[in-house]
Length: 401
Image (tube, rainbow, N blue to C red; front, side, top):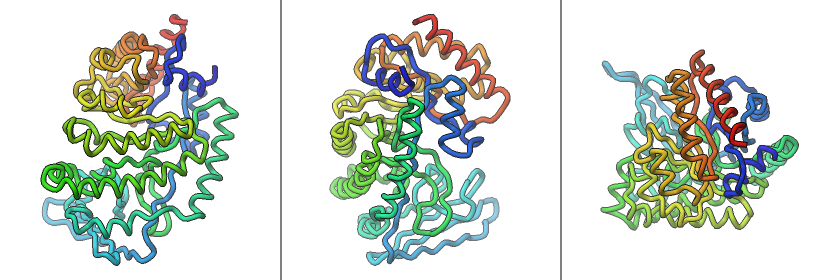
């Protein structure tokens, strides 16, 4: 079987397929690679199953939007304040963060990024009157954007077909997008995820308050994000992907109760799954914590694979609990903590974690092994543990076959 065939067979629950190993995110390696092609090739050389990812479409603001950026000098004991103001025909929006240690964008402030929320002083969307201005920031891609995206998508599809690899949409890391201000600077994702986008725009607390105090407004806001996101998803499906991924890190019950999930999140997930399945494409759902109380709803939506099973850092996601509730019902991807085990653990820890993951979840017949959710550390220990991780997986799958 090719890597593509093996991954799809496991996601679909085909019997008798050995556990594949496909790293969710491998930042330590991708930082050493020129492009997606080199990243895929080097993972193949390591013996891993892998995928070819599509880049995202640029995020375009309406032409009439004016952007002003400023940096305020640091106050005593505090980092500088970085502000980006958007002047739209419907009114202004303002985003302000404290740059602080680890801010990766210099003196620029993207609209979307995981780096924003913990540093935010002012979020761009904080009241119902910000809904109309936001519409001007969520414009459709241009015809030139779509053409360029599909052309590069065709190139990556040929590469994936030539090497027997999965072609995936909606799952990219972060990088700066140089050039004009009307591009998003920061995160790029195909199915950006309605709720991750919501948290970037509004923070982690305000949407939950709106769910109780102003539910109609929250539904309208989510509907706007869903419509914008679905346009981008449709273009990804035109590129001939095998699977699309939805960022759902902020969609678990660490934030939302099951009843709020059912009202505000489930309908959009279900519609996206139906759209993907209508194109013959599998649908992956990336969530690493707080999934078990809404597991039945994720199954109800028709998701094909849950990505990010983390037994160490997730809440309620021990391997036994996941197997008992979801084993055999849906694809499961992950099984070992990346930072705690692969980056910081001993070789013995790595072997034990891989053996346990394959033993407990491999028997479900629908398990893909991976560190969760990233390997970032470029250290001697981390690279040696990656070798041990792969060696242990190989020995287990060889003996199983």
